[in-house]
Length: 236
Image 1 (cartoon, helix red, strand yellow):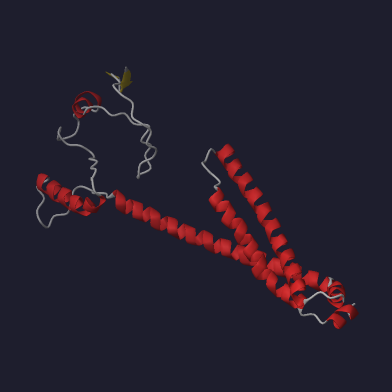
Image 2: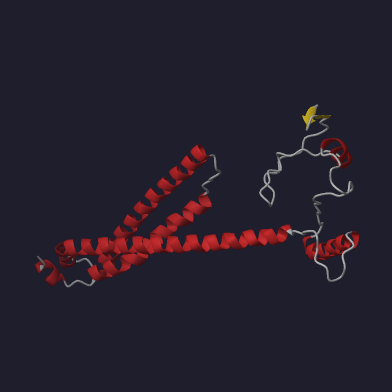
């Protein structure tokens, strides 16, 4: 037995968990009672029409029939409310599919915004890798000349600096993964939000970091491989 507005009611069942509705209402924090009981004992009959209701929820079996059902409901309500053909509706119809489409559009805009921010971050990081490798090539010019003098080929020098660029990129990727996982855990622990980290998102990000290293490290590696051995040995 529970009391709702001082009226004792008998609990005959508990609904399964559903979470929030499309309007943001917690569906696990509601009580369902018979309509007649609610009107006569819980809510009272203070409204003008005792048979009136505030809201009606309608479920359509097939999603394709949503538009037809909405039109039929609108026509029926206008007949019941005795509205003239040119008169505005005195009720509101809300289609959850339209709300879902609006939410999906907002999610797409947010995804594009995050992708733009990530792209800028990748470009900045890639330029940083390229600058580091260019400085490394400059500082190791004599080493490159010595390797070429003892028989190293251009592709050997190219491969060496590409591997170094990829190593730098992967090291940054590993640090980013560790920081991201730690941040997701901290958000879930302290804020109570659900922030799962999935392998299908981590692995492509790690591979993309390697691709960034190859792309932005190719120019410094190519520059190193094309150095003249004699000029490189004389470099001060």
